[in-house]
Amino acid sequence: MHFESLSDFFAMGGYASYVWGAYGISFAAMLWILLTSLSKKRRLLADIRNRMAREQRIEDAKKLENTL
Image: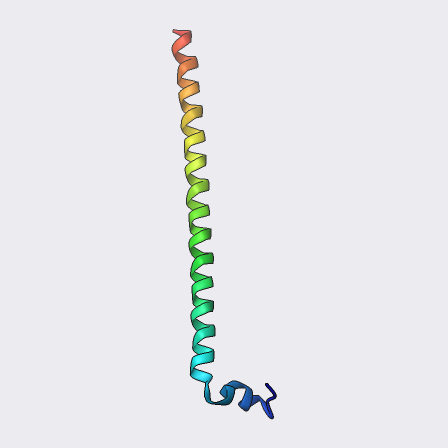
């Protein structure tokens, strides 16, 4: 499609609300997926750190029990 001016491009031949709405919805969905993925990654890494620290505390406690 050939556009005469920038305003014609943004008007999209009279279908601007559909075209830009579709772009907006798609962008919002991708942004939501990105943010939820980053949030899940952060929670997963925190859970792994907590489990590792707990296992280390358990091992340390076992060593103390053997010395008594």
